[in-house]
Length: 205
Image (cartoon, rainbow, N blue to C red):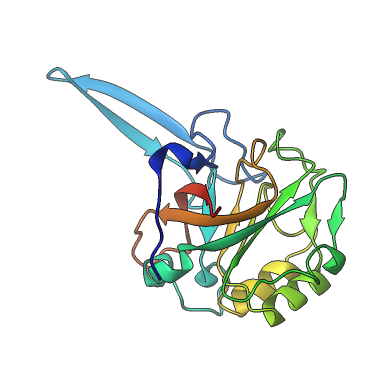
């Protein structure tokens, strides 16, 4: 499929990586140690593979074997539907059951997009995840720390088990609901369970 992209219309939905970048409790936070050597800056970066805006490859689930470097470009550049789920803690199937999602990414804009790190975040329900899989989604994205509530991994089990990658910790504050082209480029980590990404949305109108 061919897409026409205007750089000035791209919406950057990537969180900056710095010492304030939200991270899952107990995960390795981002840090940068910069030195100047013979007139050149060189930085040592320390972080989790699931730091900041990142992709979960199916292999994030230990029983799966599709790693970051196995993901086809058709899963990383594809039509997307952004759904407004603000003011709802549990995002249930009612939000998606009337959408056309076959071959598309589903992107969930939630009430907690600005805070990023609060554990009182919105999440996808397991029944909604099962419906999304049956509707043919290619990827799921959300602007919270996880697609699951803090005490569960059911949605990750459903999606990753169906070979559907997950984008987490997006920045959707200035994105309106509607149809877009999603462009997301993870670091090509060999046998990577996940990787930071640079992600963009481009309006399809």
